[in-house]
Image (cartoon, rainbow, N blue to C red; front, side, top):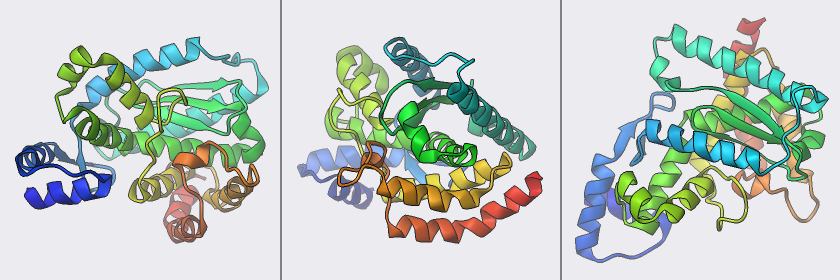
Length: 281
């Protein structure tokens, strides 16, 4: 327990005294749960049901503050179409595997906002936003499906929950969510927005870890492939993404690093993803 706490503290980069180390060790030990999608233990201090309630509220607030394209818009219609195919494929798959709990409480929503930022994200419960600035880089429906699959994979793998839990320990001392909401509501809201990479006015966005990013690449490919999209399109898309914006990379890459390692790993994941793609035909 102490060892786990020390490793985590070393990773997030701050020093604590021994009594606090014991407290953090207890929090980390009791807050670790097995993720059914990735098969690894994750720090989870916030119940998924609570995160989904927060997501519903924050998603509505975000949409109210941004220009959302109408369903009749060509770009919005494409996002809706891609989202429906992927969410239906995911739902069908986990139901067939007897793992309905993976997407319990999910009420899928897909919206397109008129914003030049090269960005997209997915909140808990399947609340997805695609920015119009991303579409010139994706160029095709299949490449868009790669991005949507990737972002949904982050949510289903509970990466945002993991990051928010880490932030609660680092910034709020690991208090329970209910305490955090009642005593520090603004800080808790900011942590939520940071954890899911939403907006730029709430402080520094928490970057995805390399492990989280690799998992999102792997399962995102599979989710897109399940929906009948050729996962091989991921290679040229990420190459375009890494070249977009010249010397200053797109905002999307501030939390989603793109490099030679990513391309190499995508190629390693491709045979498995292609099996799902071939089965979808």
